[in-house]
Amino acid sequence: MPLHSQISAYFLAKISSGAWPPGMRLAPQRELCRLLGVNRSTVVTALGQLTALGLIEGRRGGGTRVADGRSTIRTAAGSNAVMNPADSGRAGNWNDYVEEGIHYPNLPTVQDINRLEYEPGLIRLGTGEPSPELLPGAAMNRVLAELSELRLPPLSYEEPLGNPGLRAAVSRKLAMIGIMADPSSILITSGALQGLQLIALGLLPRGSAILLEKPSYLYSIHAFQSAGVKFSGLPMDSRGLVPEHLAAEAVRSKAAMLYSIPSFHNPTGILMDAERRLELMQVTGSLGLPILEDGAYQELWLDNPPPLPLKALDRDGRVLHLGTLSKAASPGLRIGWIVGPEPVVRRLADIKMQSDYGASSLSQLAAARWLEGGYHEEHLQVLRGRLRQRRDLVLELLQLHCAGLATWNVPAGGFYIWLSLLRPAPPRKLFTAALRAGLLLNTGDLYDRGDSGHLRLSYAYASPAELERGIVLLAELIR
Ligand code: PMP
Image: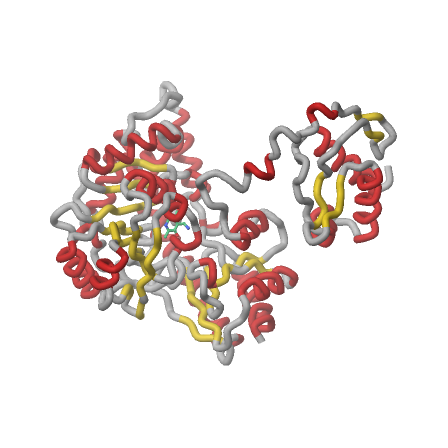
């Protein structure tokens, strides 16, 4: 079959099965060429055939869409596909539904990144997870082998707070960073992200506000906004969140909580120093303001261990603390935790039971074994060394290639370097130009909507060779 007929037959199958409902917009021609690996004329011919069959239609300003009216049609491949006009899809236009629903969609750039991360060949300069070669595949295989010797694998649901053995292991792990939490104060979640979702849904009334650092990871997801919670961003300096205007802002915005990533902040890499942590605890204490501390990067220090977490300074149960195995051991395991007062974690566990009945019991058991067997600490030692090398490499490359174009911080841990462009660049334009050059970027606007002067660089994902090529290309692009 000629290529264009293969393509129109493929589209036809999608349309006639209902996978592509009436009104659904097709990707632009240039994108189709890229996705299908064919040239423009092939795509134009295929689309022409489908238009002639009345299956798709061009709309001025609206791109090409699956046509609304459908009847008996002859397929491009020559066979007949009979469609009943009665089930032509008019009754339920999914394109209307997908715009509804209470959860906001991701930002278009985030949607693009989530999709493009799985395309081979792109250099991922901003990805916030360890590259597969930094993940502990061999050690995890040993854990899984140990589990396979159990009498029976865990195939049932776990209790609402999560597997007791895992909670005990997390409790011991937290004690090492000064957080004294009984297993009864720990809720196992499907990653720290689910912790954020549960808190947004379970603890905060619609119309309330949270204070947070600006920029912040939290701006790049819509867990809180979808729950009707507003954001009030506070400035940061090199020592972390600046508490100066916190009290006034808390009163003005009627804030219900403060969200902070004190250790190796995403996206800036900033480490809040011990004095600032105390100050923050005092200011919020006098306001009676609860804190949500995101400790996702806490253990990924590269030079010296960070100061005690806010939760370790908490004497009145005012701080909720989030942790995760994603950043060091395995993002795919989907294991995180929330530490907080028992009524709070029980409330969140109750919502979790209504949303997924618990994180995968296989994952929970593997995570328990991983922590209990000492694998995690052993892996962290190796990981820190390798991340340190990568950080130093990127700093060297930036010095070589970006010196007159941008400034940057030297992170003491985590994954990120926050690149400040000396001249602002429209983020979407930079993102698309980078993509054409084979680079996937995380632009600053994902973490602060109005930002057009930053990029979040990550030394955790791209290989050293890719980082070398990537930074040279990036410098050219910025220039
Ligand atoms: N918090 C922060 C600050 C993060 O950077 C991330 C991952 N990008 C998460 C939470 C969520 O991670 P996970 O759900 O994989 O634990």
